[in-house]
Amino acid sequence: MSALVECRDVHKSFGSIRALAGLTFSINNRTSVGLVGPNGAGKTTLFSVICGFLRPDAGTLSVLGHRPDAPRLKGRIGILPQDVPMLQGISVYAQLLLLARLQGFSRRGADQEIARIIGQSGISGLVSQFPETLSFGQRKRVILAQALIGNPDLVLLDEPTSGLDPVAANDVRALIRKLRAEHTFIISSHNLDEIRNVCDEIIIIDKGNLVRHCTIQALIEHDNYLTIVLEHTPQDQLLQILKTLPAIVRITVDAANPNKLSIQFQGAPPDEVQFRILELLRQHDAAVVEFSRGSAFTDKVVELVRRH
Amino acid sequence: MNWNRIIILALFDLRHAIFRLKGLVFLMPFLFFWYWILKFLHEKGGDLLVSRESLLLLSWLYKPAVAQVLLISHPASLSVFLLIALATIPFFAMLGSSDQLAGDAARQTFRFFLTRCTRTEIFLGRLISSYSLIAFATIITATAAAYISWQNDHRPLDVTLLYATQVVLVMLLYILPYVAYMSAISALMSSALSTLLMGMMIYLSLAMSGSYLSHRLSLDIALVPGAMKELLFGIHSHDQMYAGAGLLAYAAVYGALGWIIFHRRNL
Image (cartoon, rainbow over all chains, first blue to last red; front, side, top):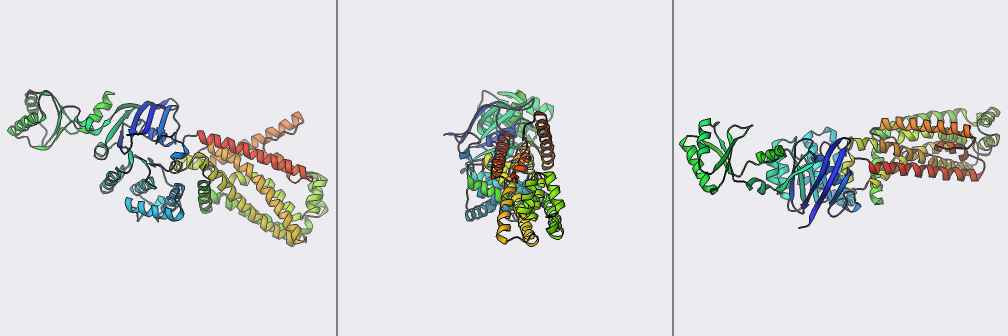
C-alpha cells in the first residue's frame, strides 16, 4: 500500500505556541483514520497544514505524492473545516455550483454532480436557502456535502457530527461508513465511540506530538482486558473478592461511571477468566448490563494521553 | 495557473458584488457622486466651461497650453469630466477594491476554495473582479459624460466619440495601480474597513513624502501613481506614453507585493 499522507518531522508555531512539534506519521490509501487529542493538541492545525491553508515552519509533508499547495492536488482533497462560514447572501446551490465549477466540472456537469451529492448527503431541502438562514446542524451537513464534490481521494472531516442531532449524526456516520471503500478519510473528533465505529486507524496527538498511531483493534486488544458494566455500583467487598481471582492483575473503576470496571488479567485464557468473573458476579447477585473483551476504547485513549 | 478557474472566480465575485455590501459600499456613493456632477455639467456646462474664467483657472492649476488643449481643442465637458475623475479615482478605486481578500481571509472562507484552486488563482480572480466592477461603473459614467458633451459642446459626434474613448482608456489605466495597491493592503489586513483606512493612510503618507522629497531634493520623485496624473493629459504624446508605462509599472509592483503577501499568509 502506498502512503497517501506522509508527514515527516513537521513543526508549526504561532508565536510562542507550538501547535505541531515534530509530527511524523504516514497514512495509507483507503484507510479511515481518526485523529484524536485534547483541545489544543494540534488537530485543526494538522488539517490546515495538510490542506495547504497553513505552511509548516519545518519538516516535509507529502499529500498524494505532492506538496500540500501543489496545483496538481487541487480537487483531490475535500475538507469539512471546523466553524468556517459559507459566503453570506448567496444561496447554498450557487455556492455548491461555484465549488463544482472550480473543481473542473462544466456547467451541466456541475449541476449533475450537485444533484448527486444532494441525494447522497440528504440536503435537498436546504440548497435553495441562504447559509445564514440555516441552523448550525444544517450548515454542517451542507459543508460536509461540499467536501464530497468530485469524489476527492482524501476527505478531511473536522468534528463532522458535533452540533448535529442524534439522527443526523447517525446519518453522517452511516454515510462515512458507506464511502470508506472509495475515499481515504481523516476524521478529527472528540467522540471516541464515533472514531471506533467508523475508523480503521487512530492517531493520538497531544501538544503537537504523536502519542500513538495504530489500528483501532491493536489499541483495544493489545492488552488482556475485560470491560464490564454492572447494573449497580459494586461494593468494595465485591471488588476485593474479584481481585483474589487467579490471573487478575488490576481492576479499575471508571471515574465517570462507577458501574463500569476495567479488568486486566495475565497468564490465563480470556474465556476462562471471563467464565470465572461472571460466575463470581452471579454468586454475589451483581447483574451485568454490558460485557466486552478488550479495554474500554475511551479509557485507553485517555490513559495514553495522560501518560504522555 | 488555470485561467478558467480565475474567470469563474472573478465572474462569481463580480455578479454577487453588485448585490452585496462589498459592491454596494462602492457603487452607491460612486453613482450618487457622478449623478450630481453630470447633472451639474449638463445644466451649467457648455459655455461656462469655455469661458475666460475657466481657462484662467485651469491655466493656474496646470499650464496655459494644457488648459488650452483641454478646454478649446477637446470637448470641454469631457475634459472636465476627466479632470474630476482623475482627482477622485484614488478614493473610489480604494473604496471599490477594499474587500478583495481581507474579509474572506479572516473569516477563513477561502478554505473552501483552497482545496480547489491555487492562491495565485484566488488572488487574480479577486483582483480582476474588483477592477472589473470599478471599470464597469466608470464606463457607464463616461458614456453619460460623452452624451452630455455631445449635447453641450456642439462638436461632431466622431470627435466626441474619439475623445470619449481616449478618456475611458486613460481612466481604466489610472484605476489599475490603485486596485493593485489595495490588493497588497487587503492581503495584509483582516477586514474591508481596516484595509480602506490603512490603504488611505499609507497612500497619503507616501504622497506627502514624495512631495516633500521632490521639493527638498529638486527631483521628480513619484512614490504614488497620482504623480503621473498631469502627464496623462499632457499635450505631448510621449508624456502620455511615459505616464502609461509608469502606471503599469506601479500596478506590477503593487500586484507582485500583494501576491507575495497573500502567498505567505496563513489562511
